[in-house]
Length: 66
Image (cartoon, rainbow, N blue to C red; front, side):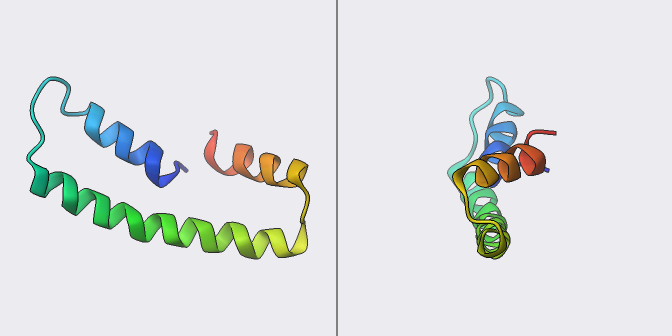
């Protein structure tokens, strides 16, 4: 799984040297904002059980660094 920002970077990179129309970029950003909201909620709920900085780093690495 990728973070919303990682997905946005991949999307932008897929255009390579082509220009991205602002409307296309805006639609993608709106889509990824919803995903980011879900990711933040999931992390918060998991963090209520395990609340340490080490756990948070481990959660991030296991969830987003595949």
